[in-house]
Length: 487
Length: 95
Image (cartoon, one colour):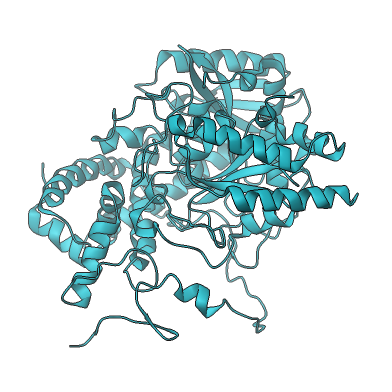
């Protein structure tokens, strides 16, 4: 087979087990692919070919020894650059951490290495995961493989673009307000944000601690379940991970939806939504009905319209506290020419952070400052309770909700860069999910003028099996995910 | 609408964030626009509603306090902008 890099985890793992493919061959194929198309896509911040080849050889030795291997053994992956990798730079696409080398692996990376995964490198992102287009990277923007003049979405735009362009077999991203799902939707790949507490964030550079989750970005739903199997679970190093057992998520993948009750909340078909997105979703919902699902389109989540304000108060507030650590003392960029400590600190942040990060630090500081705390931060936390309660109520009569992933197809580079509010609206369908801590997946649902459109499926807390099942059944009858971009 | 310059400077000082003249000007407009959008929350009656800090019910997760080896000081200090021996070297705090 010539184009080994096009394989899924599921396919590659079978071939590795049959010994008709080696991890070295597969890793070489991905590295060659990266070399061949990175100048166009620019999905990677760091490529570590040498250590990847060592890991591939080790995986091949393990396979040759005849041991029972994990589906991820020997499979090449890319990791978003806000997830710590021991001895490999972790930059958050920020000048602040441009030369930061973590002394430890994030728990998710440890779990992948335990399964002898092959780490090809680190992917580009909006600086500190703040953004929806990957244009806020301090290094360079990433391009959408479906149209190089358009953004791949963000903030995990590097991971999503890389998987769409077959630079790796799968990737990890992080999602605080839609940062896995929106780029997955924009790039025609599968992206899952697990329930808050399902996957450890130890070693994920903190953005907004009550919202952040790590999740898989993959070429299909089966692969998504396989990666979740590996990364989910309790971690003593992250006290927000729950002690619930981790099921085998692939067992949930059955090709029909008989007995499934789905809701379509009307507030997600927002003003300003592109008509192609709306009609694509309507067609997708018809397919879900054909698969046996009972679909209720008369669902209402009236507080959805407040989610954007709640999110853009809570996330920047938490960020302003989390990013206070970048003072130029222990690690990261440090301004050395100052006359005194305060000046050094101020200049370190002034030159180390980009515009969006500064904007959110300022916004969060405002919402938390004396005189405004009650009106902004506390008020947002109370409305957050309402949004969560509203989801709970709706879930009494539905197993999952179906919405668009984003109100538009991928937009052009530069289009929203000078208008933060317009950029924030790009996440309007995804951020209520983080506010309520729910799991959600984005799956390829069609195209408009050659540009991908994603469908989001939202589940009850810890019901990843349900949303994976719906996504899988839909994937079996549509096959949008098998379409490849013209690169 | 614009956020007054003094207010922008006050916020920046609270977090010790240096800003250029251009940034002060830009943020006073942009922050004001964004804050205006937050006014929508005033429409919501939140009487007697508890604030929500995060979405899971876990509280006070305890573990045994067992000693275990920590990180190699060399690896930690390799990232230090300035070091002296096994210490981070910083500027005088009290002058």
